[in-house]
Length: 327
Image 1 (cartoon, rainbow, N blue to C red):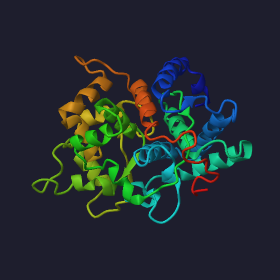
Image 2 (image 1 turned 180 degrees about the vertical axis):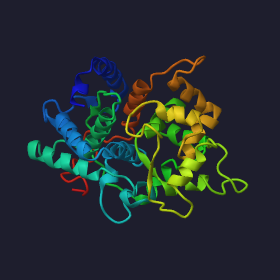
Image 3 (image 1 turned 90 degrees about the horizontal axis):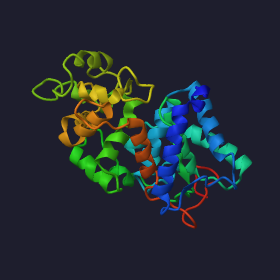
Image 4 (image 1 turned 135 degrees about the horizontal axis):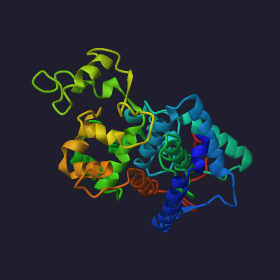
């Protein structure tokens, strides 16, 4: 994996994304290289920390990616998801199964030892999400930094997060509220190409979904395989790859599975059954007759947009010394 950082195609992609990122975020107060003078090793410290944890537990990669998404949709990208305490975002049902908090804490400890009070937890999480994609063989992109940390974290605010049974229309409305369009929705949900889901979040699709049978949008040949993994009244906490056959690699296999009726979450499979989103699935797959889109490049573009939702900069927010506690 170390050699991947010298792969020419990623350097080309980085150059493109650097220019794109700078243009997108000029007005938001974040910028690429924000810590160049105040903490030159900031990004390398985060990257090496994520790499170290990834080597011992690859599951932290999708965990950090999901955590960043869940953070940005609630109170903006301000690391409010990291705050401990009763009734904080971390305690809400959508966030209880997230993993990777220890990676952020580890990176923060190292950064505080090197550059005390300089690098925000919000930027650490944003950088860690990018590095997680790259470590799973996805694209590398330039991340604008300069976010500050929020002080408010309420479990009740997490209702804005899209749910695993949510309709496409509802998902589009939630994304649009943050300036994200339908293509952004499909690209960002494509992040499910890595990671897992607990059986309890989709097993209802396998038994008595309609007329006593399984969800008809699931490929009939795939149903027995899922039922074997998640038997009725079985262990709901058992985890299954969201991208069957390629759960540890950031690629377009997730979209191919949706096309073949092998989506795990109901909300994911709807990306194929709904015509407004199916078009983008087909384009990411490069299907004949469609205008192809490079999934990796478009995912990075959408991540830069999402990563600037409600950011706090300048004198807003704070720089937490401990990510799980308000100063």
